[in-house]
Length: 184
Image (tube, rainbow, N blue to C red):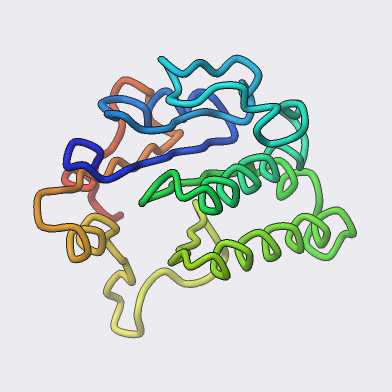
């Protein structure tokens, strides 16, 4: 999409995913909360992240890593620096704290608050998860799947988008793509 003139920003919790998403990005902003203190204008399209966000980069294994990503998304929206913003969070809290524990509830409240802020700023907000506990098919057994590439192309023209699904179970050199992914 950046090659078509769409101002793109991708903010990740962890740097390994940032490196995948940054591939081929033109004139965009792409950084990880994990390495926010090391960003350069040349590599990341933005620098001095810590002063921009107003606090130091968080430690990798903390709820603040995801909060940092969300705060960056809100700031990008307020400053109107991107037309399409992709934010990806860490699952640290979900693996560390069970649903209903105070830490999990606090984390979800922060997510709700930041997503509400983004919506109030005029963003169309889509939220996805990498997995869940509910049924993934319709009553007739057909998969209940929404293909992101098709949805984005309906908004930004056919052929303007190449969706890459960075699945951690695959090696980084061979990510699954929307055109090669097959439902189980």
